[in-house]
Length: 149
Image 1: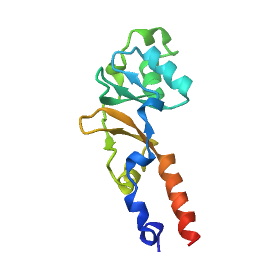
Image 2 (image 1 turned 90 degrees about the horizontal axis):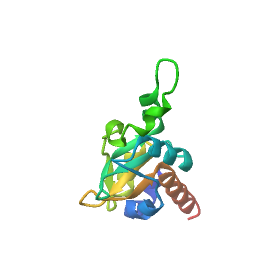
Image 3 (image 1 turned 90 degrees about the vertical axis):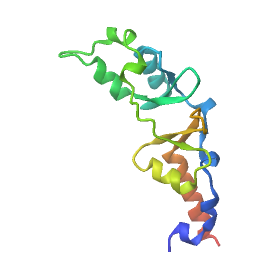
């Protein structure tokens, strides 16, 4: 029998209980140059970060790979182009997100193929991220809790 079948408490866990709040998440804005986005990515150690508009609504994401592909020339990286290109010009506009009120299983499904998913409120404002790590930590906790019963 699986953890979820044995322990129905996991069904009561909401995304809001596992997410990293927006105040603790590195992000960039649409108007930022790629130079700024690359600095944020390198300093934070993340491979991708959310992109927000001027009202702090989720607009997409930007990754190191996208930035490096954009400045890749025939024989070298054209780093001088970083300050001329805006995040909005090259970002991934896939606005996949999840609501704070979504269930644990919805969160699990959302992060199966990505390291994190953005969490938004009903109006699309960025509230934070749900990471694959947070889901796995919750599963581990549930596993050991059910095992000790």
